[in-house]
Image (cartoon, one colour):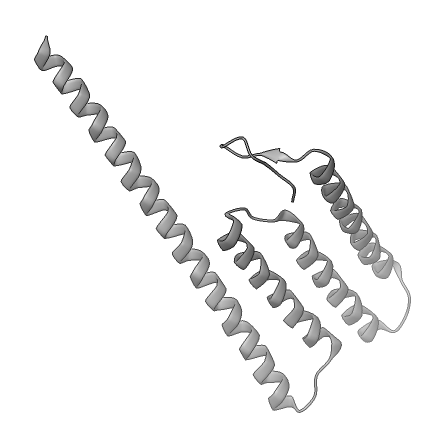
Length: 152
């Protein structure tokens, strides 16, 4: 009977250690992956900037692309600081991307058409989504595993 209890205790310790090591490996992999994504974003931003410098001029689309890179880097930085991925930053990236698309559409076609309405409608929907998310997070803050409440 005592041997069975020792075996069960050993089994619990083994599972606890395996869980600890597994969680640590997942955290390391997550951080390493985010680091590489951040490095790729920096590389893309530098490449875009160098391309602008080589052309000798820039467009508003180029500048908005740099803002997209900046927002993505901010998202990664916030995740490293808070361990939470802010969804509204993805919406900001989408709004900036759609704005970039809208400017490109207008500069190519030079004629108001339904495409402009679709893109601006999508921007409006995303802006309203951000408003709802901000209101919801201030009105109904979430509680983490420790029971501490947070507002996003």
